[in-house]
Image (cartoon, rainbow, N blue to C red):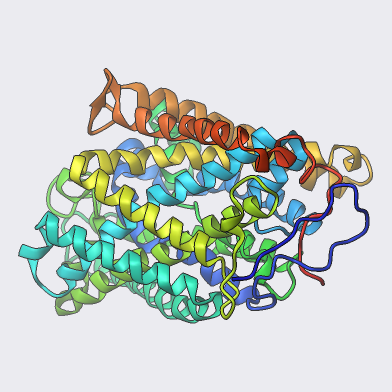
Length: 506
């Protein structure tokens, strides 16, 4: 296996060696596709739309627009930092260079926590919808069979991630293409059936759906925004693959922003179409019908697609499967970077000699996700659901760290131009503040026993799982800190503000 030696912290000049990853493998389109795949747009909207409407009613499209704002601001921060330091460690590297080793390490840990939690959920969806697509409801309802099937899918996607991003890119082109076709077709059919009056509950389009003045409850609005905020999560996978793109300083940032724009159009457009067809009733196809909340699209699929309803099931399956593969990528690259700068054992920095991928980091992430998924499933299916809810805390944490890192790292350049002031200062700061608020408000909400499916230690299970997972990071960091090989990192020698990061040549 390929190993790396670290530059001496006192060396000057640009480092031209990179980390040995497969440089130049991705372009803007490929990076954008991978960013979209990580969000699992079809499944994310299907699982979220009903709950958003339950919280704010007809203002759901407004919520999807508002929720993307802090993500766009955070994407600006990612873009600026990546232009300066296109390191696959992203939050870990940028947080360390801005605020020091502790903040950077916890930022890297939060990326891993969020990825493992969401992998468990999309793996579950893949396993269940595989059997639904085959028409076997009995197997889809059998927990042992679903868990076994999900583990097989997770193992396959881990293997694909190991053999190269180019193979993954080609696979994602197909998977993402099919799920976007399914989403667009779903929206078009919803509009057609809304117009032909086939559903008595259909409603006419109303511009007031986008009117903030129509909101009746601030708490309901914030609940919906916090819920919608995290269905945009995943676009930052583009940045974690920066060292494997054709233009590492510019392509990832462009791909991230492109991913967010595509998601806004899909989420708003399809949600409007579905609202027009299904209406807001609590019976039948109504979007506030409790029986429909967990998966709006599958419930409506039969009415819209008829005998072709299997195509929508296929779309949800592919949405979860594609996210399973792409979610592994940023975590594996993050731990690779952490190992290169001595924040983790050197084994995590080893690359496959043929595929030039972080084979050990990828394998560990896949195994960790499988163990977490099986463990949570055996303990309680409700705990698995709560872990998905709590994942938002880790996401908000590392996005906020990155946003504030941009402001602090570039603080000396903010007065150089109006562009720097806005793109490196004001907008990233606003993104950090909004995401920081999302973290705090979500944590407060999760304390309530009514928020979660489970109750642990007298509070909501989602709070215990989410906050507990972050705090465990401090324990692991402390254990690594005690080892002599980690001291260059925690003393600020192997990575600091002045250190030239190990990035590829232009």
